[in-house]
Length: 255
Image (cartoon, rainbow, N blue to C red; front, side):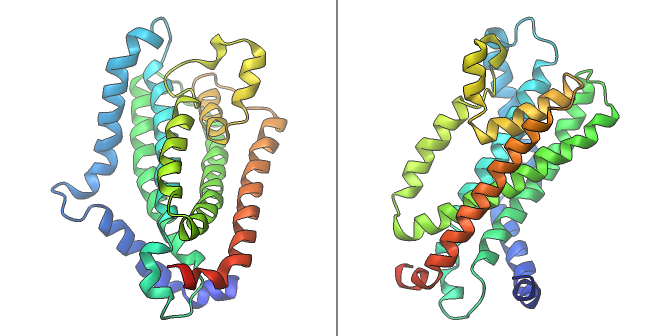
């Protein structure tokens, strides 16, 4: 796999450049939307939810922004990954290249946007009075976790979308439901402990909670929590790789 990837490294680089340029093609401020868009979303959410959910809560802006940034990254990477094969059918139907390259290029573009947004997140955290400690280094774990998890989900979705075009509409409904189940703007701690455990089934919420525990509580989640996240990431990538391996030769007949 590594040999194939290195062999087509130039193609991969060009795909990343193309995907990133297409995202802002025709816009006036271009890449600035990577920063401006989450800021505007945060402003709307803060205006709407502060009086309802953030009253009496310290650092609510950071709490809200952490959920918004990480969920937006998940949504952008997976929705982009879903179209990775269909939008590049004109290439892999003519040239024999590893099809996962198209998915990875979409994810790299999403990671770049995510990185720009993270810079703004840390600036907001500083303005919000959050104390920065050495434990912030541990934020690399949920970031890497979500990158790997997104790749796994993207592998599954891109394969499903080839065979079932209804996947796009079903996934829109699913992400909307997942958004409200990820505690973006409300506190899970207000629920009974039995309900709080149910939230841990949500793999996106796991990364959001991790970030909040480190930035707002100044703690590091337990070893079991790390293993749960690792299990989700490995599971998704494993399922996605298996689907690609079994269906790789069928993709050509359905695009």
